Length: 281
Ligand SMILES: Nc1ncnc2c1ncn2[C@@H]1O[C@H](COP(=O)(O)OP(=O)(O)OP(=O)(O)O)[C@@H](O)[C@H]1O
Ligand SMILES: [Mg+2]
Image (cartoon, rainbow, N blue to C red):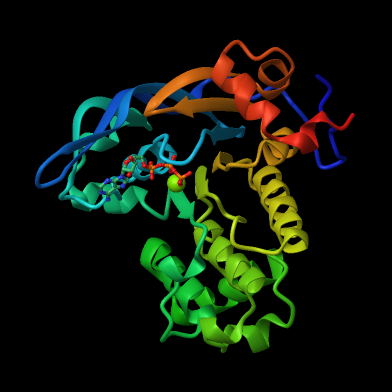
């Protein structure tokens, strides 16, 4: 099969070899009143420094549960982590105290979601929300943080940053809100950005703009991106490597080109066959 690779394809520079994040034999359960959901079962994969790693798989395959585990953001209860390690900077994030994890969250590892309103406070001006992240993580003065937040809004392509700075989330379009969330996520220069379906809720043209933005920022900041998506065309455009999940397990991991050209698993073949855009050579 030939993949139609647009000009935004990653440079495929050799990823730094050392893993930045290692997920080892992770299990995630949701202990409900009458049953237990084994959402993630023995999942292992690495994210290397500076790379874009995509995680794909059908709905319910455990992508979000895995991603949220990295910063222990699954609601608990009902979530428990019966086994596994998530190693980042030589430490197992699953064993850190809430206070220690607070140092990692948003500073070394940041997250963006499908719906910006899960992160943005509807009652606070968007600029001050970006500035607040900076003040929290860097101890900048109010004036310094404002200046840096304006620069961050500009960097993510928010027009008229000084005007937008003072607006509330509901005054912005979905695409602009997404840009603001990305600015807030990146302003502390994390080494890893986890993006869970960051464009699913947007119009197709805006989706492409946000993906292009993520690729640009990822390169400019030498940041690794863990990108969760349903869209294999997006994976072909943006990712270096891909992890294919099914029913809470990893069925296949590899370079995107290898996996898409020579899928080793029936499940991967089915996923690829269900994405007609990839068939067009
Ligand atoms: N808070 C929760 N309580 C109970 N079960 C949950 C919870 N969150 C996730 N699950 C279950 O865990 C499993 C994995 O869900 P997860 O959200 O990780 O899937 P996903 O691959 O992200 O799917 P999608 O593509 O639809 O986002 C599913 O069976 C889901 O119902
Ligand atoms: Mg999900």
